[in-house]
Image (tube, rainbow, N blue to C red; front, side, top):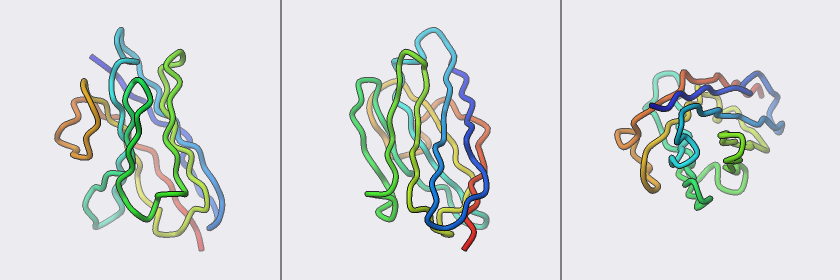
Length: 123
């Protein structure tokens, strides 16, 4: 079992930055691949980024490439999503999720989910 808790969301002006954290607990939490997804009101959930436990990364939405960076600190069992140059269209609830195995951009491949953290970007 892995428990995930997101933090770091909030209200920021366009062009600003936020760093989301996903703290994992569980005996083998550091061995899991972790992904970030987001869901805006009235829209489908979309894949943002994922990272394996050894640091291999992939990014999903083209619009975040070059602005968002995923990283992890296995000693702290924490995965981060650094978000720079935020835009109003980045407004969403951001979720982290974990799976045993490699990278995946499919939410159904993830076994464990956090409760989500709201990110609101004002124009």
